[in-house]
Amino acid sequence: MDRLSGRDELFEVVRKIPRGRCAGYGALGRYLANPVSGFIAGKWMAAAPSDVPWWRVAAKDGTLVVARRDPQLGIEQRRLLEAEGVPFVEDRVNMEAVLWDPFDELD
DNA sequence: AACTTGACGTGAC
DNA sequence: AGTCACGCCAAGT
Image 1 (cartoon, chains in turn blue, purple, cyan):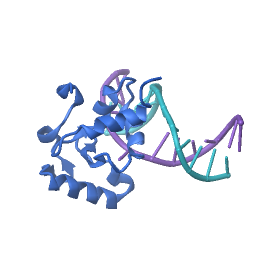
Image 2 (cartoon, helix red, strand yellow; image 1 turned 90 degrees about the vertical axis):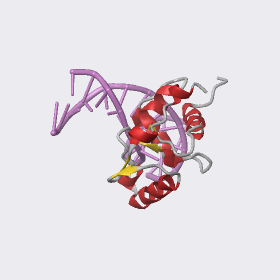
Image 3 (cartoon, chains in turn purple, orange, blue; image 1 turned 30 degrees about the vertical axis):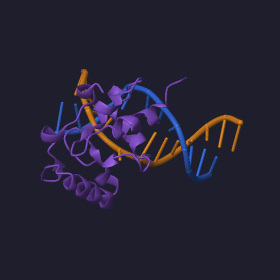
């Protein structure tokens, strides 16, 4: 009713991820008024508008999921993250260092 | 206009 | 370690 569609609400949450931090799909989906699985959250992220920091979303273990279907985009995501000072281990984000959970912020 | 298909995970078993 | 259920929506046919 007076709430955004789950997808739009997800984008709102992604906008709140601070610079230099990174969140997992599952955590984001769980935070919504109507929680969804990480699977669904991922699908919604595929349609993320340009004004949301989509690159600050990765799999829980730090994998840049987008690289799976578009290696080029994966490279760009890594570049954007490193530009914010996000540390990498091999080809993954060091999630322990930068993990952002919306429940921790209680914005 | 109805139906099918594809789309950036995660944890439980 | 492999399989499976979970649940949404838009573009194409």
